[in-house]
Image (cartoon, rainbow, N blue to C red):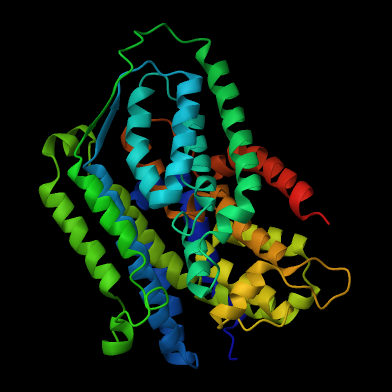
Length: 444
C-alpha cells in the first residue's frame, strides 16, 4: 500500500489550529474568510492525491461520496427541524432541564444526534431565556449531541457503518446499554447539580401552565422519511440500485431523497414556526465549509492511522483500542476512525473485515488467538463507545456540536470558544467519566 508522506498531515493540523484560535484571536478575519481557509487547506491535499498518489483519484472519490452523504443528512435534518416549533410553558428548573436532556438522549437513538439536537436546542434555549449559562450549552452537546446516540446504528454514523459491515442492528443496545446508562446518569447528575447551584441567585418567575405545544407537525413526517432513507443502501437492501456503481456518481438515491425532502420542507414549513425558531442557514453553512476542509485534510491522517492499526493490532489491548479510538474520534471524523480500528481489531482475531458473516461472528464474541486475552466482542464495545462518546471532547468531534454552538451564539448566549470548551468543560468533566467507564468495563 502506497502511504502518504507524514508531512501531508500539516494542512489538517493547521486547520485545527485555525478553528481553535481564529474566533478567539482574529475573529474578524476568521468570520469573513473561514470558508476560504478550509477550502484552501483542503485543496493542497486534494491536489497532492490527485497528481502524486497511486489510487489517489479513487480515494478522493470515496471521500467526496462520504462528504456528500454527510452533508445531505445534516442539511435535511437541520432544515426539517427548523420548521418544528416546540413550546414548553413551564418555569425552567434543574429537574426539568435534566429531563429535557434525558429525553434528547433517548430521542437521538431514533432520529440521530443531529436530529435530536436540532429539534430540542431551540426550545431548550427558550425555556431557559434569561438564566442560561455556558454550561447549559456544553452539557446539551455532551448528552444530546454525542453520548445519547450510542444505543442504535441510527444514533451516530460510526454505529451505522458498523451495521452496514455486518454488526447486527440490536447488538449495540444489547451490549452498551449499561455503560450508556452510567454515562448519561453521571452527566445528567453533574448538570443538575451545576444548574441548581447557578439557580440560587435567580429571581422568581411565573411557573407557567406546564403545557407543551408543537407547531409544524407536517415536518415530523419529513423527519421519518429522512431517517427511513438512511437504510436505502445496497449493503442493507439486497439489489438496491447504487448510482455510484451504475453511473459513477458521488451520490445515490438516499442523498437525492434527503435533498428533495430538505427543499420540500423549507418551501412548505409553517412560516410562523420558522420565524419563531429564528431559522437561517448560517449554522449549516459553517458546518458545510469547515467540514469539507476537514474531510479533505484528514485523508492522509486516516490512511496513516489505518495502516498503523492494521500492522500493530496484535500489540493493541482493549485499553489501547478504547483510548486511541476515542482521542482520534475527538479530532477526526469518528466514522472512518471507527472503521479503521474495527478493521484492526478484526485482523487481530483473523476475521475478514469485508465479510458481513464474519463480522457478525466477531460481534458475537470469539476467543482470542492470544492466550488469556478477552473475546472479540469486548473490542467492538470499546471501539463503539469510544467513537461516539469522545466526539464530545471538541467542537469538531461531531457535526451537531458546531451547529448547536452556532445556534446558541446567534441567540446571544455566552458560549465557550474552542479552547475554553476543552480545558474548562470537556476535559475536567468528561475525562473522569470516561476513566470510570474504562475501569469498570475495559480494565482487564
